[in-house]
Length: 452
Image 1: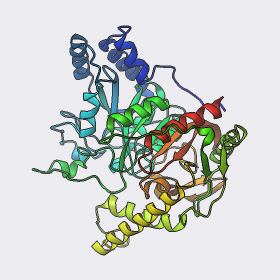
Image 2 (image 1 turned 60 degrees about the vertical axis):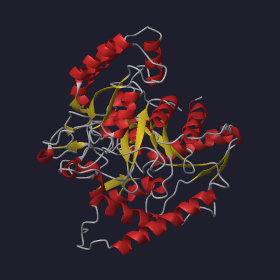
Image 3 (image 1 turned 60 degrees about the horizontal axis):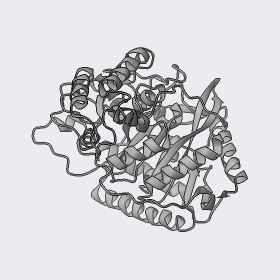
Image 4 (image 1 turned 45 degrees about the horizontal axis):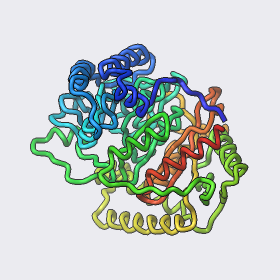
């Protein structure tokens, strides 16, 4: 099943190999990326904070030094989400009042990418406070989906996905608490991976309102939120995951043909549009035809309605840092411990499910790329099968993996028509905690079956 590809530019592995083999200099690779950005970005607006001059200077220095065997990304140009600190660059999370915050040091993830040899050419656009499935704000403007400029590329890592899908760069790093890596990958027709919570440090990914306070040092990763990569193929996604991870990630060699899969395509209170459901059903049928065992129901599935309720409570509390909600109620310490207890119980239920099933298939979102909206997607209705439904209800398909802290890989599976436009569609592959590389590998094998 074909899906629309916008570029034939090489990926991370291919670019790094060309540089190592002397077919391409770092300066040439970086200059080519800058030229692509300058050519493409006028209609997309993915890049929020360019860093071209420093990137060009670093490229010359790397060419003079030559590649090292411990640098798998040697000389490869990349971008990162605006919310990650990069020394010397602005990080305002879309707030005009916070543009005075200039990071004094790199975030931990950026340090890891640079240590692996990557050249950061800039940072990509986000919604204010990283809290929408669109990417626009009064500082950097609106990012357009490269497949349809009238549509959102997703959020909050929308600039990230648009840069990768259009071919500006081969790989990126975003963050995800409510689908913010998975939904942009789905909307833009690329690969994205929500990592197991905590394996990738988010030190240096702090709201600038707090980060600019004198003496501020974040001592922990926030609840639910993760850092995760975006790329145009499974191998590049796995490489970025390994580079970012603080832990050595294990993997198995169990092939897709021997895996027992579970497909969850219905979620209480979150209907799925035909434009998403049909490509997923086609993908599942292709797997079954290939001899893969796929169940469509199981008594082992946790109470999804209950899970969604707890997820939304924890999500809203974490995003507001405990500030009073819309009804004026502030979460108490007891409320927070209740959420942690519910999360632990939910994690145990999913772990029990994964004793029977190797992976779970699910939609990444209930719709394809939505038309631009002046308000947040979550605060407005979305059209599903011709009816208006709550935009916030779509978060269920993010929370299905987020609340139990599971890894989930989104792969492009095809294209479909939504509200009059042909758009890419993805599917997420969830696995047990710490099975990140296996999720990505199996997603890659699924892509081979689906696309032939």
